[in-house]
Amino acid sequence: MHFKNKEKKLAIFFNSTRGLLVYKKISKLFLVDIFIAKKNLNTKILMFLKKKKINFTLVRKINTSLEKKIKKKNYDLLISAGFPLIFSEELINSSKFGTINLHAGKLPNYRGGSPLNWQIINGEKKIGISIVKMCKKLDAGDIYSSKTFRLTKRDDIKTVHNKANFFFSKMTMDVINKIYLGIKPLPQKRIGEKTYRQRSENDGLIDWEKLNAEEVFNFVRAITKPYPGAFYFNEKKKKIKIYNCIVSKRNPRISAGKVFFAKKQKFIKCKNFSIRIKS
Image 1: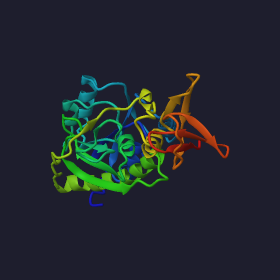
Image 2: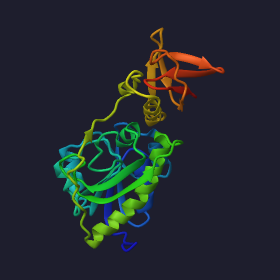
Image 3: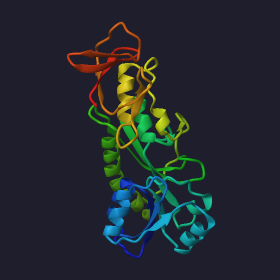
């Protein structure tokens, strides 16, 4: 690291493990202020900061008061690390080097919300993550750093988050180096641009007639714990959640969505083949 200088001031915005890991890494070398979003706040993060007596500012919304407070601090750089609130253009440009965003998606293919979930749902073989210079248009900024890692059959959304967070902490340090060295980010390609919406709990309903067994498997592991989980309604209209399943080659001549049992194990017929329920 070239800039072991505690006079350089950064600010990091987060509410989950991703931002905390990045903070731990960069705070060894820089003065770093923390801004925590109240929206979707991971209470374990809050407890950790209080236990360690680490100062932070709780942010309920982005407003003029916050923008003025941050601008007055004369930060070198702002870092958004999984922050759920939309930055205003005023806030983006309020520090010397602007703002970088740690986006958990390959760009420009996975702009928008829930990028890790969508990549798994879409059956990607590799997961992409990016660090970009933030601009007014969502996730459209120039790219400072990007990385892909393999998605194995054993992975689910929790393990993918853990892997992404590990890489982000290293990538962020490299990007800060680039910025202080004057290395410019690269413009995004226009080919493959796509923006995804933020997923909600209601999006977890499984469409058995539309999805084959492999697609159901990806769908389930993409939104399993700590997310609300995939679900279906049984014949009694009861909501049943599925957190873990595997693909089965069993392909009985029954309707998609029908439950059947074999060797005391539960299966559900999909558009093609079946899944075996594990939990």
